[in-house]
Amino acid sequence: GTSWSAVAGIIVQHAPYSLPWSNESFKQQYVNKIFSGIEDYMPGFRELVFGNEALSPHDIERVFGVHHGNMSHCALTVDQMYYLRPAKQFSRYRSPLSQLYICGSGTHPGGGAGGASGRNCAQVLLQDIKSRSEGDAVQRGLRNF
Image (cartoon, rainbow, N blue to C red; front, top):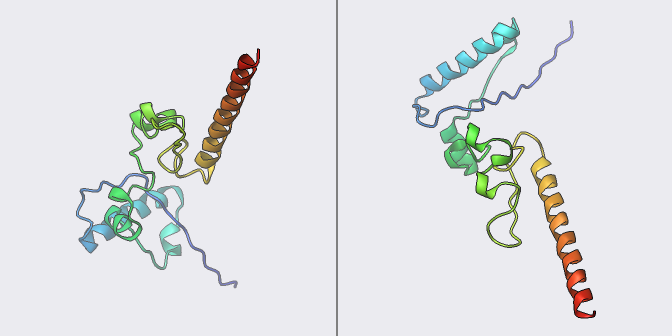
């Protein structure tokens, strides 16, 4: 028979920061619950797993410096989804400071869509540059009129 192995990356979108993550036994129980959920949809999954590494929100915060281990930089709550990221008053990639733009995991569409927030932010920036250029051209035209 053919011998093979694979690596699976499983990301749990919300793992509460306040749980006792320093307790390795608790962390393994949490992993087992996740594996059980996967097993419900993919029977035989556990038999394929020969090792795992679990990073808790505390581990992610310590290793990567991400506040509360939240890789999306904002909670995925109704008031911080879609174009409300990171908050309604700072959405659409513009900050309250002129010519300072915001992009990254904390902006729409979030960290799970590789590079999309950067692309969206760049489009907004280019629109603003074009609008300023057109506005400047109109102002120059009015002065020369």
